[in-house]
Length: 163
Image 1 (cartoon, rainbow, N blue to C red):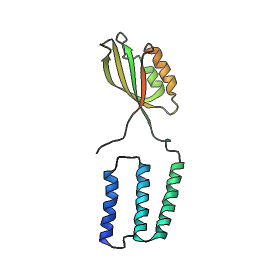
Image 2: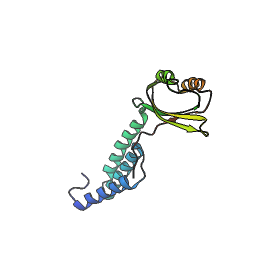
Image 3: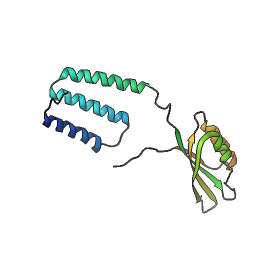
Image 4: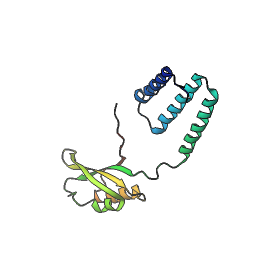
């Protein structure tokens, strides 16, 4: 609507949007959305339609505020990475499975690694936590089984990143 058939203005707008999208550091969807709203309003102002720019900013700004007010973590799974250090004489097969089954919907042993000159094992699990799972209670139960050695529970990075 703002370009009105002007090929030069259309190409300039497409180039500006591509520069922001592909030349900036990766951000969240909210950050990129705000950048596009700001660029759209600026380009509409540059064309000279100030009333449309104000309307555009108010409508999309209100939509962004509404989006920000809504809860966003309602349906996303809670992926975690669990690292457990155990003594070398502990047979780890089947020791932690009852605890993990109670607090997770899915778990997978992804790595077994020796550490501390071979006197300890470090187990790595990929977990999907249950909605009602209490992380501290799970860690306390795991500590009872691993002799109170180091346990680490981290957020799992599930986003694809690239240049």
